[in-house]
Structure formats: structure tokens, C-alpha cells
Length: 134
Image (cartoon, rainbow, N blue to C red; front, side, top):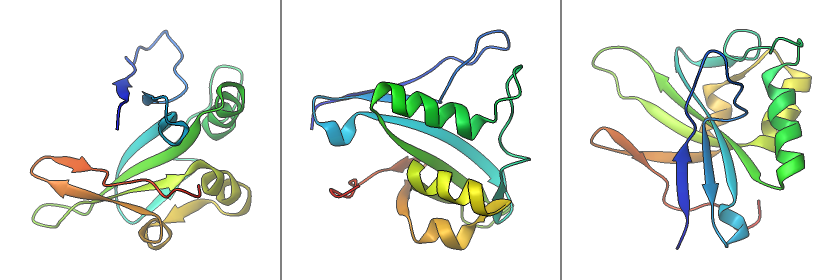
């Protein structure tokens, strides 16, 4: 499938909505991905996300970006359990992130395990396929 993914450059003085943009003529692959890598078994909205200088929470800013651009959004999270333990990574559709943001202080690893797994190969992750109905 043809497409192009690019990581946006991070800068202290330049705002950035998401970490990775994917462009494709296939609408299923017109994506925006926010990436997090955490130690532990739960991602917290207050700890792992930030607010901008206008006090807009990162979840709200990304949601607005997705609405304006028509991209499908995902949250990619790598769970690092510590030395000698296997890392796990998952993609969670942004609609689910928004729902949980309004209901809970964070997202547990168990919820990510019900999402889209990323296969670890050597030092990278592979996305086999995206669900067609999302």
C-alpha cells in the first residue's frame, strides 16, 4: 500500500499537534499518531500529556487537529516494564482516547491490550494492518 509517514520535528518554541503524520490516497491510512513511551502499567492524562501556553490539554488540541484535517487519529503507547522484561506497544483509536479522557484519570495497559497490537521486531515495531471499520 502506498503512503508516506513522517515524524514531526520537536522544538521547544514550535507547537506540534502530533508526533507522526501519515499521508496516503487510501483514507484508512490518512493518519495522525501521538506517541508515548512510559514505565509502568497505566498512562495518566495529567502526567503523560501536557497543556499548551493557553491551558489547552493535549487531548483537546489533538482532537481539534483531527477534526480540522479529517485524519484518523491514534495513540501509540510503548509500555516499558524494566530491564529483562519484554516491552509491549499498542495503537488505540483516538475516539477511544477521547472517551476515556472524559471518564477516567488514565488508561490501563489492559485496555490497550484490547486495542491494536504492534509486533516487536528487533528494535522496532511493525503495524501489520489497521481494522477496516475504524
